[in-house]
Length: 103
Image: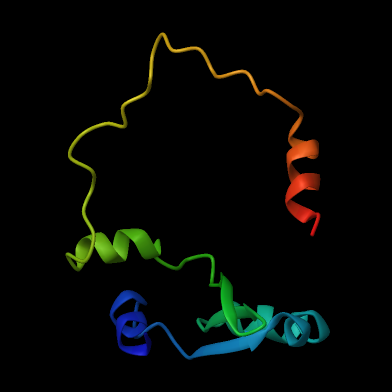
């Protein structure tokens, strides 16, 4: 995963650091200053990456991936089902959830 992540993240924009959400909460001003100076801060929750803190002038990551040829725009528009009615539920969703939780 690390090699794929290095392909997908823009390089050369300063230091990249991964921090936990608790550490971010405790020292928010420090990390905001780092991001403002060009660093990329990746926020994790229980080891899973959930957010990224970047400077305001940073290039859109998706635009960077397009430029590097790693992703491309869709070739056709998303099709929507027209004229179809939504199915009516047989029972409230809360009852279904309750049934799944029972042993």
